Image (cartoon, rainbow, N blue to C red; front, top):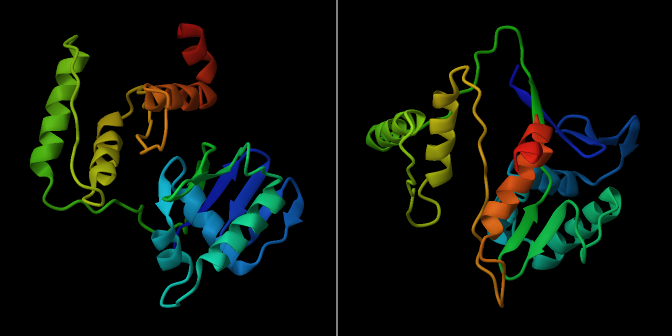
Length: 212
């Protein structure tokens, strides 16, 4: 059987097969609203464009912006969310939507199913560079390394593969923030503050807050 990820956020549990639940109560959603929620929650913290949501939630179907807006409104009602002060679904002006809460995924697998592995081709050199910098940092050499490039070339996949292969049982904490184009004035250090907030709300967050 294929792996099924159960995503938990706040008081909610999202199971792609059984739908959304709040505690023991079922939260009724239309299939398309459930599909949109799954796309957003599986990529928490990332801005998902409208085109991506159309492609993933309405494959091979032409729909209008109104259909997506209707699904988002349905989700906000179900999650008791406020568009003006969102806890879960944020509208990113002229770009798309972003799921705000950290999620933790418990993956249920068939006993015979092999573990899923990320596919990363042709990036051995970049991974070697990341590992070398990491080892230097472990030896006390402070460094900053930038993974840069055009949108959609696999920067996040590269970093995820590096983190997954580097943990190796070692107690690592990974801080994630996201640079998002803004219209008008904004906080210069917003990605750093966002990452620290997520780290403080995650596992062993009390230790992070205490250290800060």
